Length: 385
Image (cartoon, rainbow, N blue to C red; front, side, top):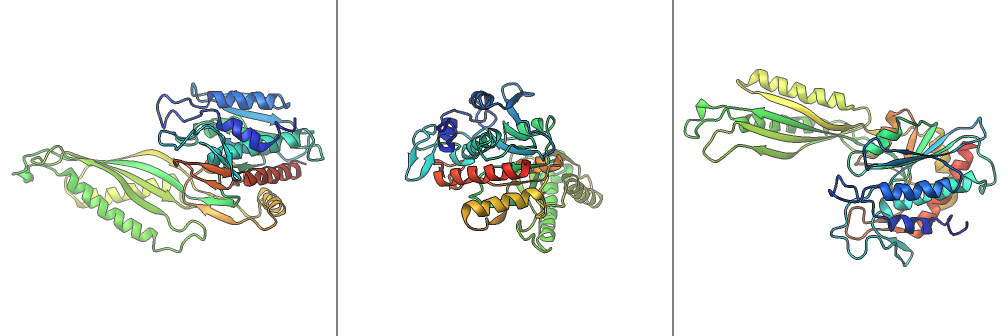
């Protein structure tokens, strides 16, 4: 099975399967075909495979290689979905190899990482790493990371582990922290009146303006504290504004969409309470101000403890394979590591080198796919032994 256990060949086959997220582009293929392919590949290599499809047409795969007993279990997580390809230059499903690079949608984000998971886990499971693993090797290949992460939420209701690795692309750096995020809507309700008699109405846009100034003050407070060494400061911004009916009418309504980026230690509940307190203060000081805050979605921040065994083991094998200590970094964006950590599983991220995530040309270096596979293989063998 030498060819099947070549991570580059596996990555090419994964790229050839259209798995565009239908919540990003309605009517797209989704994850069914690629989940079927991975399930078959893993079943042929002795893994116990479970298909999770709590949302119709959006399957995730849990595959387990049972250990002999008494060892630590390790979960390896990666997402099957990709973003769209309307503006992609060339064939997005080609899996073309050129000058040490693998091209195609998902090569970098993150089918190169999925291929490394599959091959590394299969090598250890069949004893290719030179020992039998005592702990379970658990693969979760999930739907929907690019939109709402329903796949990882669903699989975590069915599995747990002693530690986890997520192979989001990281240019072979250990990602040990990332910010969380929360999106809110704030709806201001006023009273329409003729623009020539504004005193007869209640201007919702004016009230929204008071809130915008309060958010400026909040932003200044967030930026006044010491920076997180990897993630910088928390952030708050207004991403959308909708309000008013026409040029001659006092605005009866105004809707703001707020994005709040959070550091480790800040929770979604805490930042929601922070915004509610601002609105309460404004309502007390401003006659007729009415506002309703609604949380759209919120995901907590993530930070790994450098003393966790999985961090130390993965770092050691990265050093061995790369011939140098792997960089440790934080990311400003959110990943499924936030959900994994919330489930009580120590985790971190390590993924391939490349570029073009969500762009018109996407690629991963073939060397980094092979290096990631070797790092994962060594880590699984040691951690689960």
